[in-house]
Length: 187
Ligand SMILES: Nc1nc2c(ncn2[C@@H]2O[C@H](COP(=O)(O)OP(=O)(O)O)[C@@H](O)[C@H]2O)c(=O)[nH]1
Ligand SMILES: Nc1ncnc2c1ncn2[C@@H]1O[C@H](COP(=O)(O)OP(=O)(O)O)[C@@H](O)[C@H]1O
Image (cartoon, rainbow, N blue to C red; front, side, top):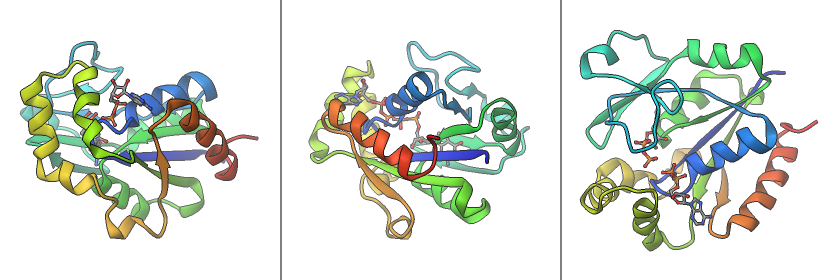
């Protein structure tokens, strides 16, 4: 069966890091999404996101899309289908609103949802700086209403979304292995 893992959570919690790890260690393939957000240092078009202008963004058809901290983000059914063409296990990084949309639109058995969290949210600012973001941009991101919403797991996700703590990376990787087995991603 083709399967999809949805990662969601607040900024800096480690969603992208975990996505890379799943690709490298477990052969997952990521589902690329579209954004109007400016490219960060080290990001490549067609590899990290499809970077769009506000005009080109709305030329595409989306499975779901939303606005986050003043930028648009959207995922397409075609991108998921393309990923599944060559790989059984796909991973996508979404905000919590997107995670809820996927829950409502896809068959339950095929999709798992993980909410990535840290024990102490005061470290998130440092993590964004570590990733190379400018101080003002990092502060603004953490104060956006979408980040504030996603820094607590929304009530609607609690019935189906597992929490993965990402404080100590060694412990995180051990948990990932357990979660993957339990969710049927590993044969
Ligand atoms: N709903 C939805 N969320 C997305 C999509 N692509 C990215 N996101 C989410 O948008 C938010 C902002 O992403 P990004 O600017 O890369 O910032 P980061 O969370 O700080 O790494 C994150 O919560 C992503 O998971 C998408 O296609 N749909
Ligand atoms: N367990 C961890 N301990 C310390 N730093 C981490 C950990 N996980 C991720 N990071 C770092 O935190 C920063 C933000 O991680 P990232 O994966 O970009 O977060 P997100 O995609 O959720 O916004 C990156 O510099 C990353 O290397």
